Image (cartoon, rainbow, N blue to C red; front, side, top):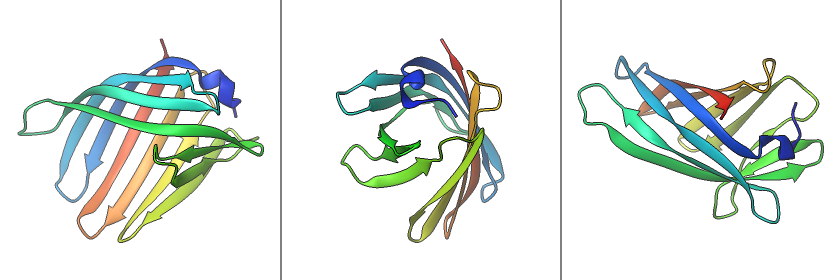
Amino acid sequence: MPQLSEFEGQWRIARRIEDEWAGTTGLFDGVARFTPDGVGLAYRETGELRLPFEATLAASRDYLWRHDGDGIGVYFTDGRWFHRITGGVRVARDWHDCMPDTYEVTYNFTRWPDWRVIWKVKGPRKDYVAISDLTRI
């Protein structure tokens, strides 16, 4: 697994969102920026989300990435814990429980510096898989 500092910079994101509940596929195209913030890296993702039967939407998300032993801790911008990327492995898995929903994540670094993130999300009103491929710009 890459070290935290190796993520610094800009990455192109291509994301496919397979919504099992709605039976549709959405697409997100954008850029992720990892910027040093004095403690680790601030992650900011911006782009366009295209969902079936809807107008294209501007979309963004922000996280904080921090050293966590031999891995990386990922936090929401308000400091709440989100999940951990396990160090020393090419494929890392974790989950986040946000009752009543569950979020299972897999990071795949086998083609570094290209990498993939897969989120499986389930809940009473959610059932989707989001597959993001990131490539350094």
